[in-house]
Amino acid sequence: MAIAFLASAGVTNAKNQTFQVTFSAGVAEYSQDGTDLQELYRVADAALYQAKAIFLFIGLLFIEKFNI
Image (cartoon, rainbow, N blue to C red):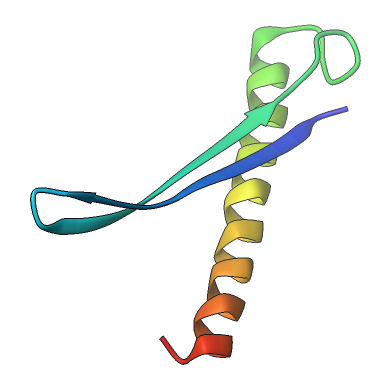
């Protein structure tokens, strides 16, 4: 089973600049998601893009809710 992992570290300030830091990962399990490197990479990559799409959707909802 491929896993889409998303963690948001929130807002960080450095040298008078504000940054939003996020982390996304896609994980594939050997033998369950594939048995060769190419298939495992393809499945993990798809899970990564799923995590990014979920964050984008949630981020847009947050922006609309607070009129940012």
